[in-house]
Amino acid sequence: MDDRTRRYLRGRFGDYYRRADIPLPPAANVREWGHIPWTAGSGTTMVRHQSQMDLGSLDDFLERTAPRHAYFSAARYRDPGASTMGAKGWTGADLVFDLDADHLPGVDPDAATHAEMLAACKDALYRLLSFLETDFGFTDMKIVFSGGRGYHVHVRDSSVRSLDSAARGEIVDYIRGHGLEVDDIITTVSQAGTNQRVLKNDGGWGRRIHEALLELTSELEAAEKSAAIDRLQSFDGIGAGRAETIYGAVTRNREAIEAGNMEVGGPGIRLLVRTLAESVVDEQNAPIDEPVTTDVRRLIRLPGTLHGGSGLVVTPIERDDLDAFDPLSDAIPERFVGQEITIETPEPRTVDLNGDRTKIPQGVSIVPEYLGVFLMTRGEAKKAPEPA
Image (cartoon, rainbow, N blue to C red; front, side):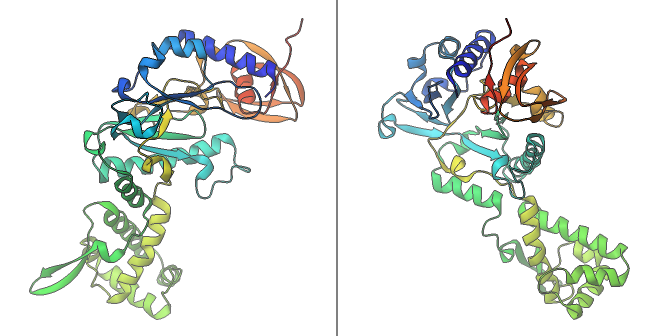
């Protein structure tokens, strides 16, 4: 980034913070604080090991330093400003999840538009929230648009604070479906004097797999028999003969399938469930960034601040507002709306932002400031002199 662009962005970030009201996280005085300033050159410098006392007033600090990125720790410490991690005195940490569109399966960052990547990430966020709300029953959570290409979820239930890295890793494995064994979600019950294997379907992965089995059963019931047999043979390990058996069993015993009975149709139904489970995990797991969740000393972006790689606001979102939230409109700082600036781009670009699709030619252009800031922070444009 050249000097003119960096000076411009630092100045405008400072203007944003002069009017912003950034709320403090809970227990702000026992958290570590960090930031990345607008340093010259291509590298970045992380300034950390600061306490709230070191910063002073957060509003004054942000206005004075206008950081490129601002962070606080998920962890709580006895001495958050100590210069080494060992000296801080860890007392607990929020459970933090990070979803980044760059790392989503099936998303090619080089081919997908920014809007497409964020839409895919929002779908993954809904899956994550399903696990956190339904499977774990967490209630004290904050959902945050990261300001870049993803979302953060902060779980602040007191029950999670003492979890160590290994315990958080087990939560990650559950949400990702790593190591899921179907035998673990099949139980044996006594029914009319005989033992019967039953798929646990009252919650968790068992419920998800059972719902997929019921959906498949409805599909088979509605299809012509030949098409239904072909559909069953699309699952690994199920040939023509076994497909016939499974088809007859599930279409004649809907009530038993609804009850999770794994004896219907013999071993074929259990093979089907095992194969179906693989696709359910692939489709319904939440591809969270494991190191973020397992790191009990992680720094995470401070909601309300600006993301130095997009110029967008790190935006907290109420759960009821998530459906309507559009990050490429709702996270644009109002401070950057209503004026135009001159930028220079090395090649033509098309940008979807604030509900508009803007085509920008190579060379010097006059654009809305929020769009210019977006491109400059991403390294896709530089600040040009304003016309005399």
